[in-house]
Length: 332
Image 1 (tube, rainbow, N blue to C red):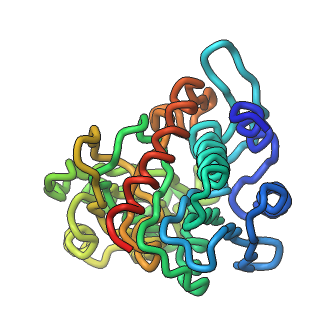
Image 2: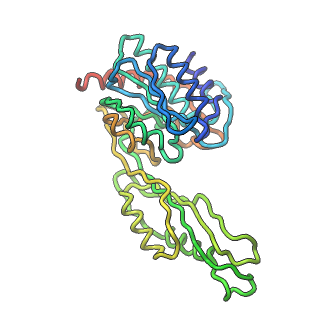
Image 3: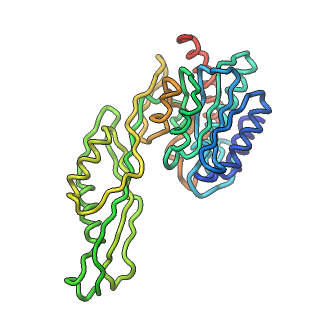
């Protein structure tokens, strides 16, 4: 397939996190047809990572994720863009990596592989379990939308769920109850007032993603919860310590996921950027030095108008090929 056709084909296979089986089967069949050897890695029933390789021990691995956020949106295109869920995060990137690997194979380069994982959008379970594949590569090129600039680092992620407990009562008799909602709101107010600091990677950002609690307007809520995420440029222990001090045991804190800020491997004379999002990189260190680069603008990821520029897709194939050539000259 051509680069654009492959991108649209991948987009048109729904793969919202937890439902990656169909795209994994497609990749398995397609890459095998290109002459790659395939290893499946079962993560959970009907969820698996796909490793494709030419050499028994590839030195450079291309990597990105198969899953997308919800909802599924089919592919469409115009003169300049390809649209659809996963266009830039990360099926266009996946297509560019496959085309680059195919071109390198035709040039006689065989010390390469492709690792496509599940679960990046939630808990990175695919990346975490990929260490059991024992690939032994020297470099891993991780694909996320960076506008084809080489990432020099990215923020970490601290995702938490706050749980408040109270006592139900009639809303006309508040002295008989204890509002879990008010406890939760006070905790969120205190957290929003925090200064988490910053580093050379940038400032921390806070998002309150969900809030729920109570059963009716005339009943004092006996439970409430909120899910929050902090994009952290400082170690997660600093973030969690500040939050614990701010809430002072008024609510319970459940850790959903933690990913530390990262600095990545760079190549001289390439344009560099720092990314405000987190990636699977903290869980892929067993695959060698990580590089972070991919076509697409992160501004469009997770949106109703997700898209990727066709010109950037084409540029990415060449960039990926040149990166592999450069990396294979580094050592061996």
